[in-house]
Image (cartoon, rainbow, N blue to C red; front, side, top):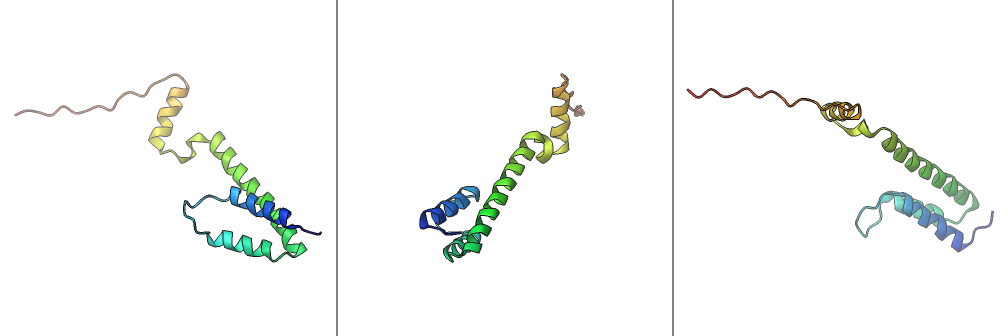
Length: 103
């Protein structure tokens, strides 16, 4: 497989789009490793990079779908119960407050 610089740049940029941004101008160790692997310019590493890129995209899509179809996954139990009750048309009653005695 012959690789040209444009193909290498496209693969590297695709990796940068898939990886979470750090907000800093410095590269993460993973970005450095990917850059070094792609820069080695061997046909095997390019094929592996493309395969790993497909894996990273699939993992991102899996996480997106998991969050979309399991919205209560990251909620605490009380919030999940409240939203489940609302889904079937009910509201949970407010918590009973014990009145303070003024003596």
